[in-house]
Length: 211
Image (cartoon, rainbow, N blue to C red; front, side):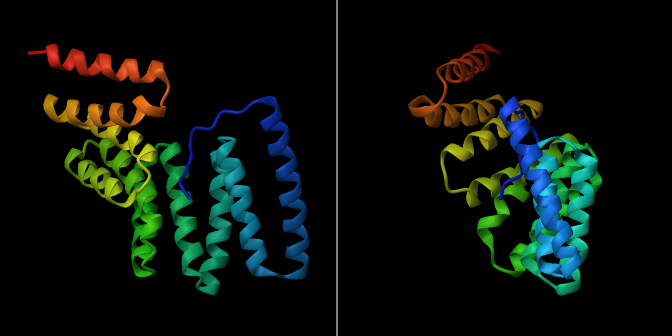
């Protein structure tokens, strides 16, 4: 359920997206005529995901907001949390950091209430990025470290380590920056792109040589 704000695409992807959009809109119209609110909310969410991947953020915001409104009426808490999380991703892409923070905090609150800890990592990561952008480095560090604790797959931790490296560089803590770069290298050297590993290793060497 992680948010992906920066998605490129080939012409084949563009064709597939148009097909999926057409299908979701058709199904949405059918369920609106039938009055099936749960299915309406579901297809609003599908369209939101689609528009988010296509970087059509205003459309994505509208779809997720529509889904949220329906799910709030039925008190479907798991879907409410998901809608807030997705809206948080949209606002992050739009660089509306205040709204992004508010939405992700609401998602976290509900996921904690539902004891759905496996969904927390994405929201923690988003908040880390938000706080880093707002200059709240202490809060950003706290969120990224929480994300590491909840994210089990080692490969998925690389992005967090690289965010923490940037954060510690901003705090002029070169030793901590090197520590997290090394953690990233240790994971990537077995299965990551060789060019990326070399680039990170070069940065470690440069930090080591700096006084």
